[in-house]
Image 1: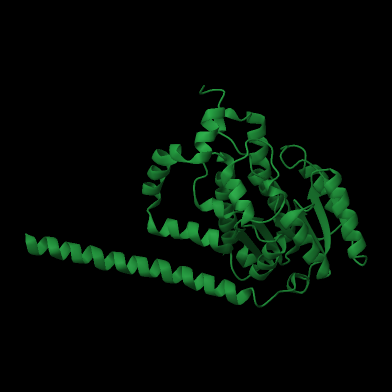
Image 2 (image 1 turned 90 degrees about the horizontal axis):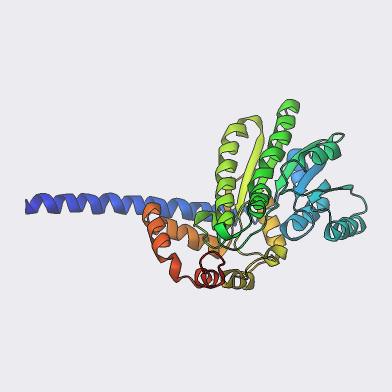
Length: 322
């Protein structure tokens, strides 16, 4: 019996060692490929024979950086964002900086289900768009049950829902025209872990990642590339949010890289890598997923969430619990 137990233990250790080794080596391979590709920039206009691109959330941050990079490569850009002063300012700035390029702005609320597709379709009906950057998104901090549901629904629509309608429309057009194209999604490192105290953010980003990879498998053979990028913290207006001020967001903001870093890596990934993990925070989150089983980790988060400082702060401020 002792021999059998030792034998079984040796088998478990042997198999586990190989599983761990394969998991680590395949991830290191993808990181190595990312480091190689980021050193080999791509011209998307030449790669996809592109004239026009659509960028959601294009008035600031990563979206603005993407628009700048597109214009620099000779691609005309349709900016889709909230119809506010920031969109107007960015639109005029890009026109001044890139006088040879054409720009259009579509001021819509991407968090309102019935508000955005009509204007986007109308603004692009007379042009050929084969570069689409689903970039819009924001974080809505606070406990799920204590946040107004209309606010939650809008957050869900902006972060995840709008990318469905936009991608569906333009992928169909690319397929009908039988042309190459690129659809990108700005997800987050947060997609890899649960996100209590900002419930919708990690969950919508997880949806976006899974959807992007699934779509990629469907349209790759038609010449349409799909990329989803997982940025670590980025220095942008992302952190200028209403609602509770969470310490975790303040710490993340301090570690943010410039938006152009994300734009550069997004362009480098086109047609090369479907999922691009950016930054050390993303690597850390992926490591947690490799070390701890997801089901086990879910139990840890569930039972220890109460000791989190942001959780305790929200409990003290709660109107439902007190």
